[in-house]
Image 1 (cartoon, rainbow, N blue to C red):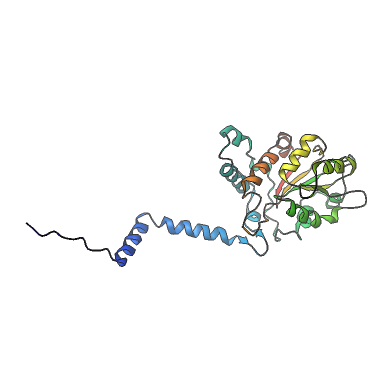
Image 2 (cartoon, rainbow, N blue to C red; image 1 turned 90 degrees about the vertical axis):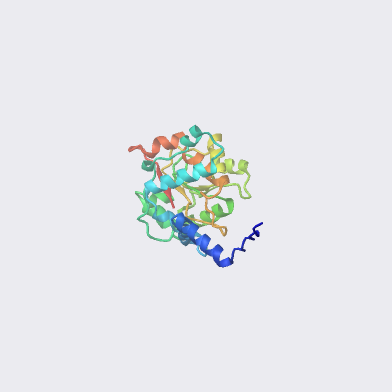
Length: 258
């Protein structure tokens, strides 16, 4: 009987060569995926709390980015529901020419750059609770910071609206809107939607919607990077009265991503 042969143990060097061949066989896709992830990370400035990539995207790329995020976090929605949340590139105003860092300090300058008459930002429609500008943020704490950043547009007769849930009951916000002229308002998607549905937040005088899109937290997340903020944001931006005005040449509604 012929002697049985025992299998030789595979050396670590052989395993390494095998893994190298596998990477070469798949065209180095693993390496490319890692590089793509690293490149994406390079756009994030944690110290400044900014995703610098947002400011470089034109209208087409922003619409695509928005659609990708909606489908990623709206996986439990039906295709027809997802389609209804899409925003046309024609609805988004290209703001990629604004070269300043998209931080709180430069937010007033950004608003002035996209207003036909910058001085009008400090004014407000005569009817209470009818802002001409709404800035949408992801959380109440951030919204409070944005309110402080745009205080220059507040005066004795015109108040910046705080339309978010951080320590503010919705009934108190309703009373505020019913009794104050508001030019610039800052809010979170769910609270904004609730106020609009109740009728106290009037949208017929709205001239611009600004999404606080570049801001990220310490976990590298912005308003479009979490399901609990992305889906409410998509629903808010795709309201029928907004979609009708985005491309209306006579009564245009600017959609800006800051």
